[in-house]
Amino acid sequence: MVPITTLNMTVAPTVASAPLKPILPLKRESPKTPVKILVQNPCLHAEVLHAHLIKSGLLSCTSVSNTLIQKYSESRSISHAQQVFDDMPRRNLVSWTTLISRNARLGKFRVTLETFVILLDNGFLPNEFAFGSTLRSCSESGHVHFGAQLHGLTMKMGLLLNVFVGSSLISMYSKNDEFDTAIEIL
Image (tube, rainbow, N blue to C red):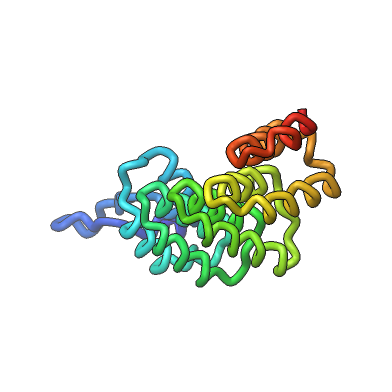
């Protein structure tokens, strides 16, 4: 009798009584499989991966979509990353933070600030990485007033002592000639 778990078989061409040999054991793929593929093979092209995820139905998994956003962002295809983000059925803080940090790194400061506001409007509390990237965008774009509002929010959330947030605030104030405020943070 042939085991059910080895359905992918080859049949011996001439001998009917020869046993069937498994080619590949049949395994159920977990949603983490594409993530492992990305980590182990960074040369894998994001579009090919995206197509595979659509065909396999794994794109609806939030962590898989987050990984795809990251992969597109690393290849500087932020518009593709934005499209994956927009198509996600469920987003989490990682989804938002990935998009915010990548926009900031690519110099899309206004988009970074807008995305941060939308994050807040959707009921998410930003983490230190979302704050740091948004403060960098405030610094680079001269939106110090918005950065000062973020400063107040970091104080309310108890993140002011976080090294990433604190250094981002100091950098923002220093780059915009507000040295007294920068010194106060120290």
